[in-house]
Length: 239
Image 1 (cartoon, rainbow, N blue to C red):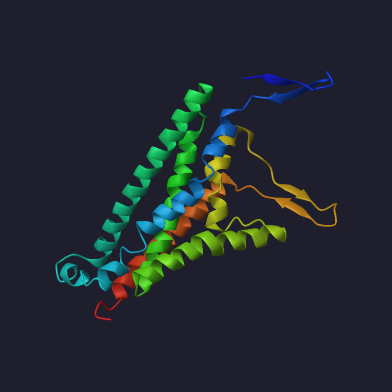
Image 2: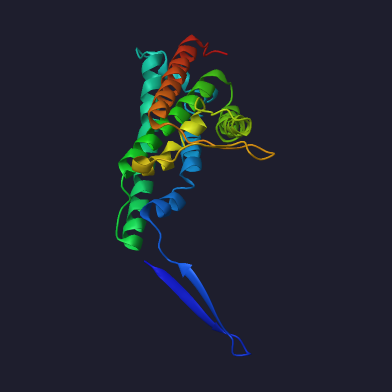
């Protein structure tokens, strides 16, 4: 890596030199490679979760499960565990791919990839729990899938953008806490919030606090998982 230059010779004999910087850090490369991860997590979480509970009722397979001496809580937790296994496997493949690309490109693997992986797994669990909560309440698989995508990919990001627009740090939103997936790669030189109100239009750039984000994502996961269990236990399967 280093500086490079391109020499161009014009017809009149004038030489034009274009210089550029070929250097790129492992953090910059990881940022670019991991850009779609946030969306991948949501897509995988919804596809492996939104149909899990409501599908049992819609397809009438719940009639075969519930007469057996198996608690509904056990059914929900076993399905959640299966979804987490699928999501974790997907994340492992993704992170191994990014690590290999970084190693073969720069000869180094970004530090704190394991920290980023932990935030990815936690964000996946929060998204999965949200999909399970909707799945336990709704009557059709299509509705659960559509509303899950709408909540995680539209409502939450828009709420985050509006909050930032008016200078309120959206630490309480899972989409904002999930940004630690990439910001945690720079945990040793963590970026600071930028607040510039000198212009006619205030400018705000907020970064999630890693410790607070862990608490937020854990609370979302626990509360929504508990809601899924409570609603599924209470729900009338004959509806």
